[in-house]
Length: 67
Image (cartoon, rainbow, N blue to C red):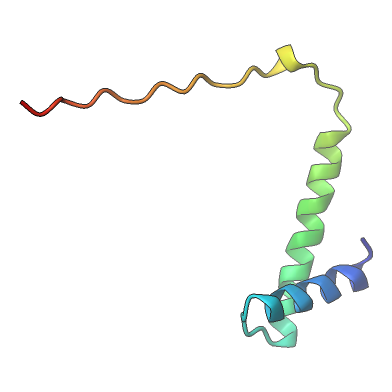
């Protein structure tokens, strides 16, 4: 997305969720969103196979059973 498109998206999303943002706030959010998108693009460019980062196993904590 271009900077203008990102700013337009931020404005539209703020309206959709009822979040009041002035122009300065919307611009700051757009800058952070652009930065985050850039980081994601960099990370997505790294070739990884499933075995490079296996998923954690979910193990619920044991809870004492009421007697």
